[in-house]
Image 1 (tube, one colour):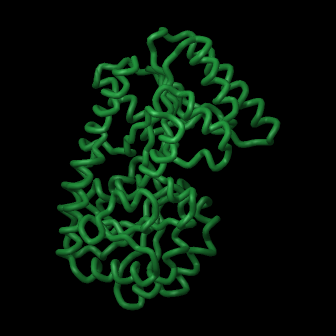
Image 2 (spheres, one colour):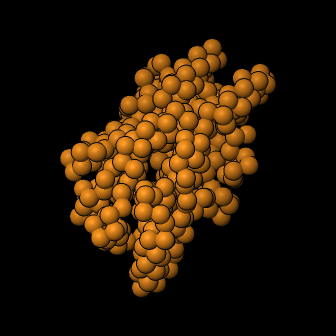
Length: 352
């Protein structure tokens, strides 16, 4: 099988739904080759040239593979979706290859015609969320839900280290996510500020790879600081994400209630749950499928619900532990990479 990723290993979606999935598929008897696509920033003309070169190289890479290789497209090839649609038509109908399309965001919002036709013409469509599944099923009868998952072998250590955390550490309310999702923290200025005047906790943000990246949200961060919030931001990296997860007592996943957000796949929440962190999240999209309110996390749709949910967890350590344990159990049952790739392998074996 050939996996064409939308970006390189540093991109979360490509790493998790491309590289990690590919690695696990090899354990399930598949021969896997990965063709990463590097992100490009530049002028429109340069972008078009870059995308066209990727389009040609992708065709070349496909045709030099054995004919029985399944073509697995993670999000896209290049930045121009019409070129991806042309690639699908050429590879499927001219060269008779089987094509799987993996989608974990509402890409159809930006180029509906191309994305809809890609979904329509691929042999199988893999989606990361239930709202995406409902959308894709209107265009293709072979749509399967495979959530963005984490290796249980990695998270076993997280869970053990989380349980061993020192009892006298200051309580940490944390947010881990890409820099682009930091804007959602604007929803929490009032709730976090109110609670900071009542309780002693650290509000920790782990998102940017450099402090310069954090500067773009300086105005937002200053709102928290001016209201007395003990705010700390930490650089994100492969080497420290696991450590940061073990130090977070409560995990936050705010989202706007927009069409894009309703189709996001909830990996941030799953990441917290894998480490036994009780998640407090916006009641939007996939979150409502992942979280049972009050059992394995809390769903919030207004400031008061955020305040009440966080207050319960701040005041009651035993509640944090029980919600965290339920969250971990949910992860083990539904979001283990090993379990979900076995399901995916079974799907793929039927089209090979």
